[in-house]
Image (tube, rainbow, N blue to C red; front, side, top):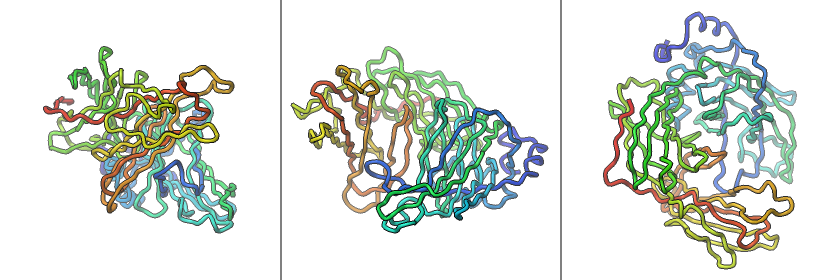
Length: 464
């Protein structure tokens, strides 16, 4: 049974019990937006609700080779090397459940891939994805994705990832430091779209999923606790956690540092010269409460035969404390302390009292720049007790043929997610903000961008 020896956690009697069950599952496809939020086409919403009940369900059928589709599924997951290896090594929890609504909408959840920090649900639906059906045609059904959770804030970031197979999707949840729930209710909502573009729910299918806790505990931890200095700042690599689907490099910035660690270029290599790159889908990094980068996420070496892993640090992004914030002034048409390379494209006060701010930064090293967020610092206004840092939309502009690649980034609740986009030559990134009810002097920018400074001499740290 390919891959089971590497896991050291599956017993033959458990497999035999699981294989006696009959469950089925499949995946689906989602187009992402490039500008200003989600595309107008709303389609089937996949709703995850976490139940507080602890009814353990004896589900797992790990021997995916006996099901037949796993090889095709692995080939369809083209962008994520770690996930492809997991599927090739039969590290999967079989579900295989089909449902059809009363009005004929069919879907199937085929399998889950679970580890200590992530759940991936592979599913399929026959309804075309976002943008595949025109809104001008009354009565057509489309689907989109809308994630909801029960009150109690389970705490995760989610991503819908397209595959190369038609109508096949991966719905990925990164829990980071949160506990994976033992029961998840997965709902697929189907919408009818009218001539005016309005949509109404037509039907839905509910699935109850049970992530296997045997997989949810799988992690290898290598303690490092080695410090180095970059641009005069002390940084410590605390440990490397390796899961079947990804690896997490834990970092710590010294309390005496005078600059915030915005990002760091760390390459991971093993003794055979293989490079483990950063995640291309899902969580890329997380920040601590002090604003410093505290973890980076990489491809996994869990299933590889390697005796050592070495980290090579060759670049850093630092934001000095005195450069971290800048006052916003419409009167002077400027924002103070702007980072190198950032320009103010437009600042305009609109009729409804909103201040429009559009920033631009050139693309560098295939990285989507995340420039700033704004913060209300004035006296409280009526109804403004919930004011907080807000970021609106970003966009790509480029010249020439579409032959370049860039990894877009988005931050939610302190976690960065990333996906790959194809763009033209000489790309730059625009970031658009709207500050409602703008009052002069009551707002400031917090800068989230700094140019990457390459080190003359890379720093090498042996991890294991």
